[in-house]
Image 1 (cartoon, rainbow, N blue to C red):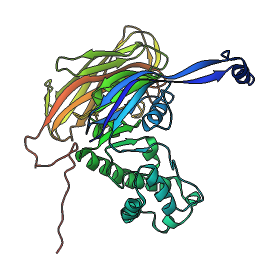
Image 2: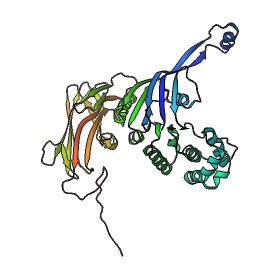
Image 3: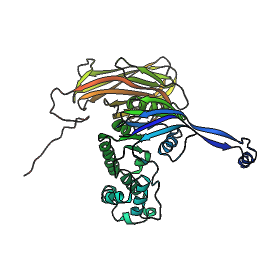
Length: 404
């Protein structure tokens, strides 16, 4: 099985002051450039069979790191060690020649992956079947859509199960059907022991595929841990690009609560009540409940929006909305005022543990003006007392009709 070890990896590019600085440097030996560091002292190890997500905003250094890991770029300092056959899907159609047919490109791309011609020939029927591009396999790649290139590139990279599979955002260009198909194949590989490194901004993809996540920021690893915790921190950073208000608090159960925001308004409490008005931690499937939120206004505000989101035990969002989208206007708030919002709904959820994330902001989202974002603001459980047996995170009881 594959192992990946990244040790003190740094990468810098030379930036010359003028077009003649390079010539002067060559002739005199005197430095005419300054270094632009893209990565600094990146360290992590991925164990055999482990699935790790790599996240970070654009420009954080993810693509550069992947190119170093796959050997297409050399690090300025540090080294990367990998054991086993590595297959990488970094850029759309990487290694494809636009004037060659898909079939010809399959042989070239397969050889770049270390496969012999006879191995590629044996895999060709499987590649064609998985890519599902029909007669286009014998047409020039320049006639392909981006989705068709993605289909073929993924099919080649996964024709033979690799020891290490590295997948960049390239899968995001595929259609929904092929994305499901690709992720199922990745899951199969993982269950068979393939080591996985996946780069994605898709929280659901990271949390469903990975047991660990690494967050890159300005070329440094700033967080390495459980996917839910890392993605919460990542989302808080996105909201706080111009502020340093992200805080992580360790709760009694060991989970990490991420809070961010500028503080013009704060959630004082979040409580869940049943139909009788009792404060509850456990809710029966389908029962009506009320979510009561008390908000402290810390300064005068012309407008405010409150949003909440339910997440399952893996941190996957299952439902979210806010007062802006609901058409409720909250205007002209004064410092020291307390605002109470009550949301009444049926808990049409599956059995399991859930958390509530809250957000206070202006407009449609918390990105423009983030007053407060709080993960794990409340946790509760849904149990099945009197409903029929079912699976999933939603209770959608159907009516059935049989005709013979």
